[in-house]
Length: 306
Image 1 (cartoon, rainbow, N blue to C red):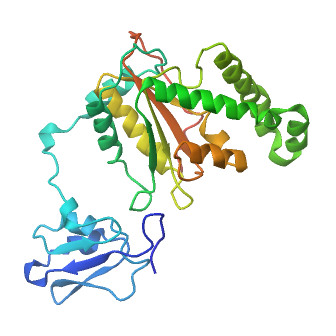
Image 2: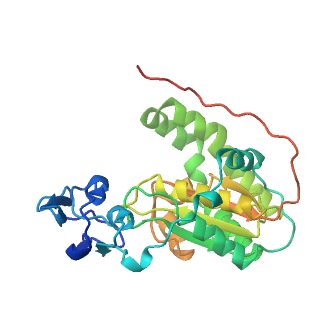
Image 3: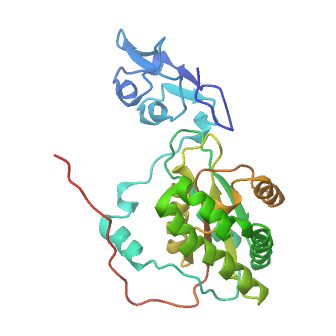
């Protein structure tokens, strides 16, 4: 048995070099699939793991003697690297300072984001934790202003054909089905959003992606943990901040290209491989504006149990 993804439906193989095993037991401690056990002071595989090795590689990366190798599910010993020294890690105050300094930027200078910066953003996003390996996160890269504008224009043409989705008769029909909160959201946000996107685009103003020089769309697959694309996108956004780029998350595109034949055609045209329960667009660019003050944010609630 193995947990399926779009990239593999097989379990990984655990290879143990018994002669190198020191019997420390760390691999057994961190394997939450219960694929490993100690037998006569040496690590060995078990006959009844929970799912079969998912290639999280915890055992391979914690073994002090290199006695364990994982092969499969897009993982191999060649993927192992030494962790950075503690002195190079960001501390809490430094990270908090960066996050407090970040603002959503929609105003960009008219020059491109360098390919090296795009590579660094994607490299950092790949380090994001995931529900199950191998990652089922997919990324659409629109790496210049013209590609971004072309996508936005096509999206607005697509919305023109979907106006029935926010028509009075359709919203009245759906209200008893999807409830009060969704009805309010559609009437007060989604319906005006259609008009804003379409009308401004007709006037030559892109309020979909704000003529950004870079847009990244993070999305999953039918197998993906819904949180995975959003976490990866958050890491990408933080990477952009470290590179001096402004960024903004755009939530108005993803939900509207998920369902129906027209949505499928739109996705296929733009190389979007799958519908996805969750996904998010990020735009990046060199900021035209710079903020000197921040604003405190709050949660809806914080409840301490017990």
